[in-house]
Image (tube, rainbow, N blue to C red; front, top):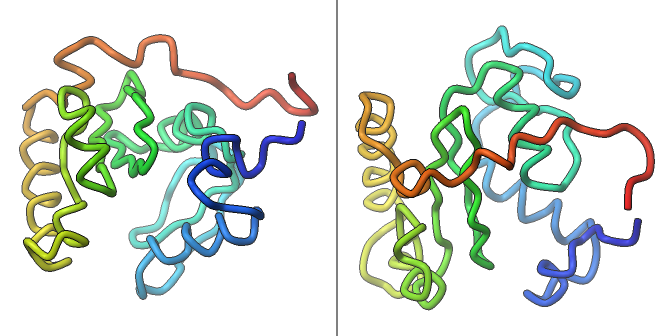
Amino acid sequence: MNANPSPGNKAGGLTTILEKSLGAMAKAGSTNLVDVLHYAEPVTKKGFVFMDTPGYDPVAATGQVAGGANLVCFTTGRGSVFGCKPAPSIKLATNTPMYKRMQDDMDVNCGTILDGEESVQECGQRIFDLILKTASGQPTKSESFDFGGAEFAPWVLGATM
């Protein structure tokens, strides 16, 4: 009931849901928003689409998959081991120390940008290339370990504890 931002977000330095939302918007980039959808509503337009989901990762991704997503790119700075069956989940580690601790379950180290080892464009190209490989059948790290079967979690309306 009092978990937004989540305890992990708070431990990472976030103090309000506004700060968390600003981070989400920063990830969206600068493309135009083409549609806003209710939870699990089918995506019918091409481009940047926003779906109203809760902040709990398994429930949010379940709604996106129910809406038609057949691959999830999941950013994590704290190390969420999220598998997201039935869709592959490419985990994008936002910092190198966490990637090194969890490299058996993280698909891409995006911390290389902060480390000065590559540009945003170069890292983006690595992610894009992995998306194509995954869509062509290469398993993600979660898939190779069979993670995610218990994470398919529909949104329970109302207060939950």
